[in-house]
Image (spheres, rainbow, N blue to C red):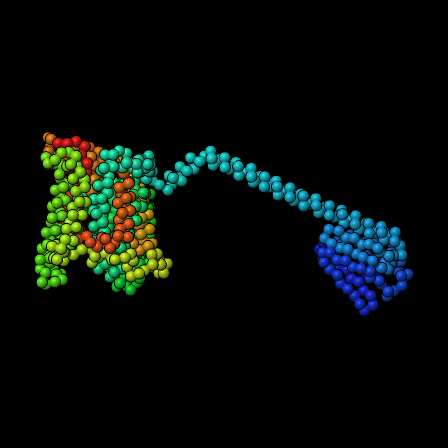
Length: 599
């Protein structure tokens, strides 16, 4: 029998070759059992060379190594004649019941093989232990280094954070954050700190809801025509509501509002015409212009660029406020003019005049109730309640009056012509804009119009907030122009990705918000109302814009609001802004507010 192990095979695998005449067997594996194979080709007394006596080989271990040292001749008594069983596995090698001419010598060889194998395995174990210990030492060293690094970072944390903060934000931006963060909690709670503040907050929310709702509907109606239905009333309502809520949370000056403006609408209209002429998709271009504008706004805010607004003079503010005031008055007059030009029924020529009367009545009544505090009618409490709840009451009364059969027969137009009956984006488009559908070159070129839009936002936003922060308003918590810029940049990014119209600083709504939350008293000497203090809160802005966003679910009810009533509100807001174009130099004729003392 010849048992041969291939030197190329790993130590844990053994090859046994058994040959008998023309028959042979090859057994391989991690564990093999061979039972009773007998060699008959040669006599048991035939000499087996010292080379052939190497029956089994595993690496350098050989059976019969010591036997060959004793018998260096060509004849060996280690003539294996039979094997009853041989078991080979990964962990041990057992050869049992070997019949040889010299059992003692072969047993010694077998024992030597096993001993060599055990020694080799012991060496392998020692090497493995050494390798494991080395890995443990390295891991321990890494752990120690990590702890030291953590202690170093913890020890120098303020220095590292200060370094990063100084690199990312300018000193003006850091001062804005420092100035406003200590008031953030009180910005939410001041609206409920007393019963007096709560009675002031509720009517302010109701009035400013309509004051912010009217521009959104008006500009949404105009945008439907300018963009061929790509952006409509639903988009303006949704954008005004969501962006106003987010801005009230992130902004530095919560008394300032953002809303759609005529300048922003003009830019959107021009961009749409450009895309139409160039035959490129409007919304992807719109999205990338907004993305670039957002990047520019955030960069300008972090760099403290709002400090440049100090170069704007009082004359700049007055001209800007006058422009916004005239814009509101123009929109109101244009709405009333359309009633005269587009008479649906030639037999009903009275409708334009009735609409004009309703608009003038809304405007005059609102002015009177907001100036009730300057009269001698009733007592202080009644005058204050009329002043606070009067504008909302006028809107409700005029809307109910339009439902009366005697007025309804004139066919006064309502918002049903502009407001859809259910929620649906214009054209049934998806909410998210496929902004990656245009080439990279077009995306980069969108940065050019974004520079123009950023310039517009920079001036509009900073001047609007500057009007709010005017010392005459007696705000106590301080300004944060750069933080407001970053907040507007974040809002612009969100609106651009979903294709909603952009918002920016709204001077008219912001000024009326300040007026609504002001505590005033009548000065006998000057015969004017003077501001005592202002309740600076984020609650009003958040709730107002949440109500505007919720108006999406009340579209059928909103359709009953007469268009002349909206025009009357526009006239009132424009008049108040025009009266205040000298940066609130006087206090006569402010919107709604709360008086602290009686006349």
